[in-house]
Image (cartoon, rainbow, N blue to C red):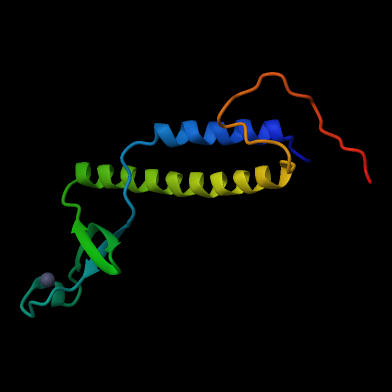
Length: 132
Ligand SMILES: [Zn+2]
């Protein structure tokens, strides 16, 4: 189903509105660490005893290096989960934005000016040039 240029432009405008509505976001992923600690006398090294954890943590990269932040309580966990989820939305928006822009570039003919500077209400429904 081919979308009209007008549809594509309004889709793009909607994406911009969604960008504006994003709240705090951060990249990273939440995972749980669990396992045995380094203390040989600890109960976690006894057979049949539970290991430590799960201890939730947030990991992310800063200039190529992985940074780990512990999430010591449910509030911190919830906050980080919300921020990371928002980052995923942000990434999806970027992908959609790039995609719709590429379609607009294809759909727009050479003579037509981008509508961003000035919105013109009157527009002919279809542009058809005689084939040569
Ligand atoms: Zn231990």
